[in-house]
Image 1 (cartoon, rainbow, N blue to C red):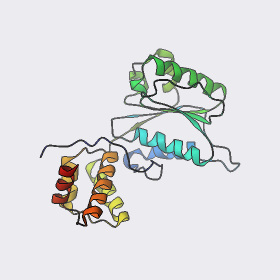
Image 2 (cartoon, helix red, strand yellow):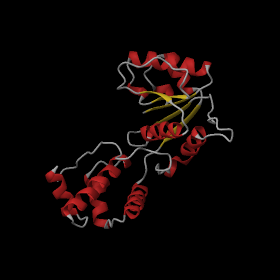
Image 3 (tube, rainbow, N blue to C red):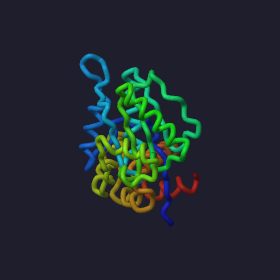
Image 4 (cartoon, rainbow, N blue to C red):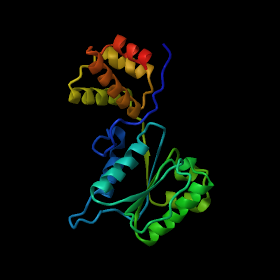
Length: 229
């Protein structure tokens, strides 16, 4: 059976609490403080920009969306820009922060919008959180945007090792009351996309299929699920 890539997002909305930090504890702690509400009720965010970089599957988008959700819980809104935003909105003074995802994929339109948002954010002392696949200095972006992305806090996100991915799978399965045998975990980790988001989505699909078919979670069940998909 050939390896199947399930590069799809999490079934539930990402949160900071659901992010398994592993070697990325410094970045997670920084963002938790960045997004937290102060005792006065005002978001405790720094106007110094923060930038996350790392390989696909390291959790960059998860963290940006988690911060967006945390701000929303506080009653705040944030400007969101990614490479799929073909018609970026104008900067809004009602935003509490701006979030720039996958900046390494920005075309001319997104770069212009990001630079405009960045300048306005600095004027209004708003936080800026951005993410890309490589360090700021290596980004193929216009100089004025690249330099701004790199002058603040920069964190490299590292992929989780296999023991850490196994620990997350076990933790989530136990929380759901599911039994995952070692053979099932081996199968999941060797036959499917190994990034954590995809594994969590796979576990969600397996759980639903097992409930639907009233069968235990086994390798034959997973194979049957993929054949029925």
